[in-house]
Length: 553
Image (tube, rainbow, N blue to C red):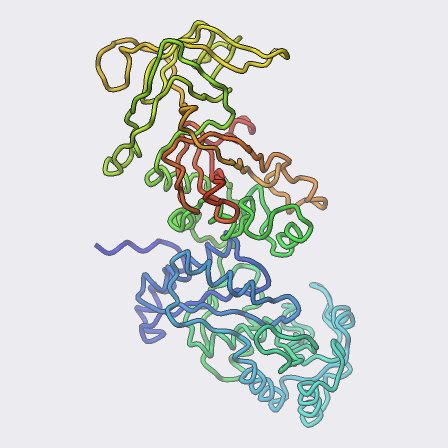
């Protein structure tokens, strides 16, 4: 059965285009990142939208690098983007393109506009162009170089290409209308001089196209039908149209949608780069980052990001999306697929004074998936439980272990705390308990009921592991709105537990494997630092939204 297409305004536009045979029944989209940083969750939404459209209409999808700025772009970013797009499952087949491969064609298009009297070489500096651009209420001032002859412009533009002029000394500008109410049409810059080595073209070029000039040409050359952009390009669309119409070449349709803004993080690549360069995080793939590589390392799945993109939907107005929705999407996915296991993060020893020997108890691998089966766990005289599961002076409603109280050990027996052992400083170091042999889980030999069930591991068979508890990177919902945004980094966004104890079934876990530590949250084996000798687990997300309580919800 074919999956029903999403109902949003972009799909409605495409449905109408197909009905009217506007593009001959074709649908061809693209994802055009600039390789000046790693992709983030906002890019994931765009990838899901663009590839999803191509998939749903049996069309084509291109991955195209808008590599027009040699000063900020690197091969590392290109490689990371390819990896991320493939990981998300967006299949561009063999259609991977680079704007830099079109530089010669773009140059020839620029020559055509010069010959038509629609472009000119300008000697004003970037600051001077900015000052003469005008405002929303005042028209711009025409450049003194605006009326150079076609011959002079062709000569100067060719010499710009040959490298005769220093960086920033000249630009090629479109000749449109300095009084236009749309500031983007006030003789925008098409080319600037930059003497810098390009990551693919080397030193072949020293003039580079601006995004506004390159964007429509790239779409045209590739035969894109629907050029889907975020809302900040809406005011640029008349320029996109002007360039293509003046050149009289194939003309795709630009459509804008609202970009993703996510609470408790920042989405600007400039700010993400600052977090990396200034050491606030451990690289672009830090699990606290909103980057696709960071989310992947944290344990997010492609399916959860697709689900998130569908939950957010496609809108025409910018809004803030609560990060709790992203956390819901990953919980919903991992609940179905994650193998259950027991891990004790803050251990306190329990000695069962009336138990000898050892035995296997049977544990369920995933209650949501009966086909996942069961596993055997060793039950022994000495165990570890989490320190938070015992209190000497419990508050009302505490349902775990207390002096003289009873609790069930998950998959095993009911135990009773008989004695609390402390060191010379008054710290609890051991609980001496008794077990009830008639209360083994699933045995049906006892009707005894207790209110609490806690997890545990065998002190003899448990393995040690490092566990990293990741949380939201910022303490406020919209750090980007603050001038001193770095002041709001969450000091508790990472807590490292050096010596956690995990059940034996986890000993041979591989990087990227995902588990639910019962009563703790979802965790994955870290792909960066985990080794067979020292396993490192990253917390993907807690079992419940702990932040809702903090906000008084």
